[in-house]
Image 1 (cartoon, one colour):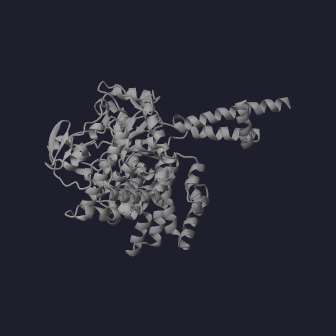
Image 2 (cartoon, helix red, strand yellow):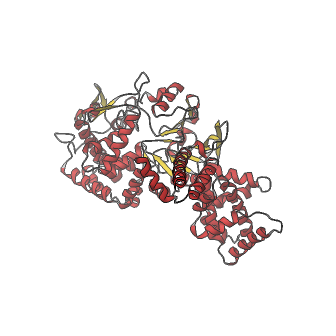
Image 3 (cartoon, one colour):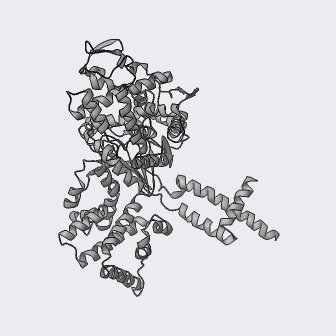
Length: 624
């Protein structure tokens, strides 16, 4: 019955035998095209300019194609000039215009070069898909130029030349170059994966999200910093305090005040009155930190299942002696002024409550923030299985024996895949559910909980804030980070998520690869790849580089190690690209085609349905 109903609906889309045959022929042809290029990026941490550049140069893919086409005929400088124009067409054209370097001859040359690059990149797609990627206002002209064929009388070549001449005659070349450059970048990368942590540390996560909103095809695997902002936007007060504290600490208040319209004035006025001896920003940082520790304490006391009572430290402070007791040991504190602590140290003072209510209202009512967070929910998830690879940001919690660790929430026990599925559902309930306090509190746990799959370590924010003794700062990591070096562990994880092929990998972010200390992004004999190489400028000294990205095309996997990016201005003035080293990880024995991908499997299922429809229609025709 269900199949009959489905085939009847399908027959409305394909009303006759020839329509069905045509679609089967078309889909079978698509299956035999090479798979599109996937681009993996992780831990962007608000570094807008570096992200923007790598997004534009597609981790070097664009430059590789330009060199392939023109490497024997052009100088390195001329090649980079073309690349910079593709990356930043508007800005580069404006600069060349001011320098009076634009001429009819230059326009003719560059238009022909860009058409050749677009031709090369479009060769792995159907003409229909390429046409859909084109800007509507230029689609017909670009389509004609990309498919010019040399004939006996050179009619098509003359046709091509006349189109270019007309573009120049009507002063439409700049707009056409911008359109071609956008098409080239879209064809260079078919799908983008962001493996977590768009927010915090760097200043412009909001600008990154504006770019992602316009991207043609992407997915996002939530990171701990993303989930923190998502919890804040849902109204979790502890998450709100953490977000503000992070941005005060890293001096990124612009994203709050200018980016999202969240004023810190009330907090600062309160902080100055509470801590008059401190500078305003230091006072605000201390004030919100104390509010944060109180709010976190309330969550911990309300959820004994989190097993985090050892993080209740405000009641262990001895203000008279300036000490605190942690795990039975007495530590000297670097601060003994805590005027907001009352008889219940985890209760907000009346003034703190007023400040918090203002901040909470600002987060809930920020139109731009809510738009960005809804986008994270629409495109994001705790993990993703894509073309037989498993993508997640943090970890799969394990015990000391290397087995999946069981966790109990809301009366049920979860481990491995079921735990990540529960976390994903809870995160959605927190934002879309009405008054689901358990789910809302769980957003904070995902940010920093001891067995959180996004955190993966025992957070010591209190110790790092108030203790000089750095021996107390050590944050123990989950056993996952010990066992994920072993191939058998990675195979266990892949099987847990239904992946059994020898070509499956885990793509992981979250922990910066300390390249300067000899660490490598490949783990477990190549089964796991860590692609957090330190986009954030603060990490560059630690990692020795400025980020890893991963490219997966029809020939195999390549990891790219990037050097620090100076600025868009330098890229425009000096045609500077990010210097990147490419390491081949895995070459496919035979080229990966669309039929080998997730989309290919869906197409094959659809073809099977069309063949059933064809058989059904054929039988009906015979009967009639």
